[in-house]
Structure formats: structure tokens, C-alpha cells
Image (tube, rainbow, N blue to C red):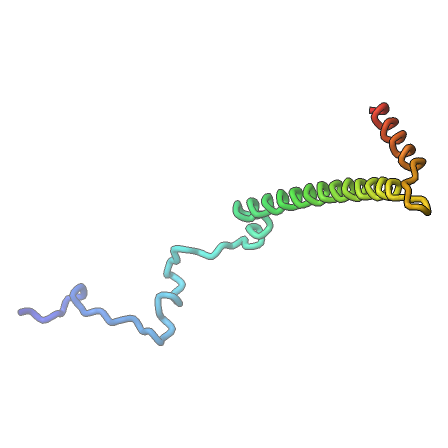
Length: 120
């Protein structure tokens, strides 16, 4: 056997782990994933998931506004109906001192209903 005197066959030394000359600290070492130079530019423009989320929020806000409008209309109709019902009940339930029903108020109620039917 020949002794290892050639340059190419010399045994390699392992890199120093605690020293200053590791691969990560070497400036000649190329990084595969370089950090982006313009971080502010990417923050200004939203990406696709953010855009989708914004659209969903807008649609949810529109749907909520529509539900609130429908609920308000429904409440107004119910309130009006209860008011009419109360008037009718008061007119029908009026009695004389002897307990007989008052026909005057009942006739006015019937007249009002007939006028409403003619108006339609």
C-alpha cells in the first residue's frame, strides 16, 4: 500500500460546529429560500384567502341587513294588526248597564269594514 501523500486523497476535517466558520455563517453559502426584500409590498395587497374572507364578510353583512329589514317590517305589521284587533275587541265588548251589547259601536265597525272593502 502506498501512503496518502496526494492532495486529493487527504482525509477531510469535519466543520466546526461551535466555531464561526459554519455553513450558515459563511457568506458564500447560497440559500435556497432567500427572504423577500419587499415585505411591505406583500402586506398592502391581500392574498386570495383574505379576498375570499372579505367577500364572505360583505355578503354576511348584506344578509344581516336584509334580515333586520324584514324583521322590522314584520314587527310593524304585527303591531298594526294588534292595534286593529284591540280596537275591534273594545268596540264589540262594550255593554250597557244592564249587560246588553251596544249596537252603535258594532254598526260603526261594520261600516268601517264595508268602506275598506269598497276602497280595494
